[in-house]
Length: 112
Length: 115
Image 1 (cartoon, rainbow over the protein chains, first blue to last red):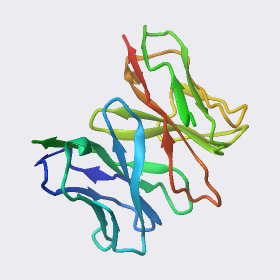
Image 2: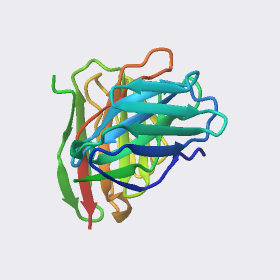
Image 3: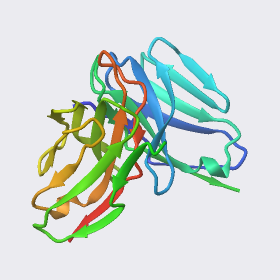
């Protein structure tokens, strides 16, 4: 089976940049996703990137995709305390499928 | 919009009891899913449905059952609760065409403990 791997914890100071990394396994994935889970809540789609792109920027968020290394990263510029959450990367279970495989999640803690 | 609504939010069961986790969405989504979330393990797909009357197993279906009699509702049934089913359960829905999917909407979760 496929495994999507992430480091479990990241701690950053408010105002710094955060970089959350993810390694996925299926090179045929068409889209790759980042979801955010705030305490006591379900996951919300944060952003996604199409597999033919290397980078996608959306305000404070930058997604980088290295298909050769199957590496996905999420950079949050000017990290705020409201960014404290668990961040999951996800990829489809296979081509042309709706089902997602989620990583283990990275807990981002932002301190003042 | 209510989005995806799950009930209950918390439940404690004794071993061997049964219960149904309710999930409803009001977005006319065709796809619905049940995931469980265990600490440090990410989310695992239990069951999913691509439309009313159609259900299929995910990665970890054992010990669970689902039904999809309407587009809106996708209940998850635990028949004989076991401690291994202690987890946080998330229902999700999406609108998908042609097998591709851009966005899952999640409920707020049900925290279940089996003692």
